[in-house]
Length: 427
Image 1 (cartoon, rainbow, N blue to C red):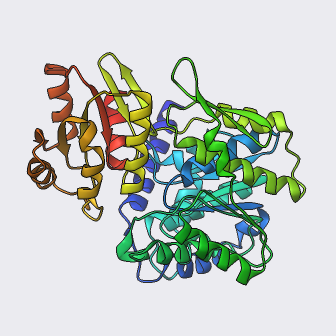
Image 2: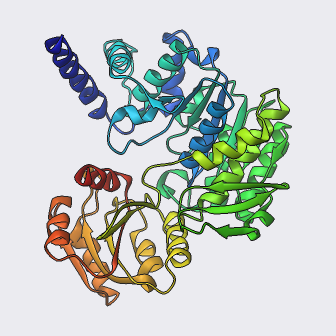
């Protein structure tokens, strides 16, 4: 039996290696590729009630909130997100549990050994495995997070979702999605379908106008959260969450990031929309779902002494939200920032946003072919007249930290690849 498990483990490692070494972008757009893939697989998505979630920031958190609400309401619920932090199986969950290795092996080998006639990206493979698994498990609802964008995204090959959700839109992947909020919003709005209601997160006016016009053109109802709820917030006594009121009910998030309240509001409105279309969710189930949601790598405290917090902020909007949350949570404090970013990010703006709260920086290159080299990032930080140390790898950062723990709190951010490396090192 032990030998069988070892053999299956080796096969799974090889299968995942094939997927993870596949190209990040294909010759065709994701939607074109996945239309063919889903047709060849017998359209597993047509057996599922899919909630399609797009956006720049917060789409993973909103997906997690919705998944928890639906699971708590007694529905068998699938969740597909990306990227993963520690293990590929994090991308595919049912009722909070990651796909078992046996099922992951079966469906991974199934898709990599199938000839679709076109090359697939890592994301395409992952989506195919997820949908096949959700169909196998007979999920009653499935929350599907987009990858990059919306209109051309692989997940947009799903033609008949039951709800479209677009979270906060900001500047990211501008070389692909556009240089203005209006252009980016138009790409995200590409997931909207005629006859499918939509829920939009809190938006800048420029993005909101585009989303409203797109919904009007499709003739579909749409809802924005009531931002007045953001004025009725109080922090928890232990500092590890917030309470807020929304539509005469009190909710609690159990994460220390204040920005998660906006994500919770979007998820609540999405749950209301599902209710209006026949989904039974009791008010107390909605409250419990919001309260019990945890999303790894988002203002997550890994150690308290010495202090280490990680956050997946990887674009200016995300870093702005992180900086504001740190200011609220730890007023007047200065931090040692560990920073690692991808080369296609606006790292200069990201640095400027945290400079007022920085005691010093340590830079490192994340484990990615698209990484910005640590010395280049350090050079810019030096030009801002701030103390900085460049490290080649995460292991070197930890050696420095253990050898001479700083008096200030350490906050790591900049790339989800980087956050995953830190989680592995800590564990």
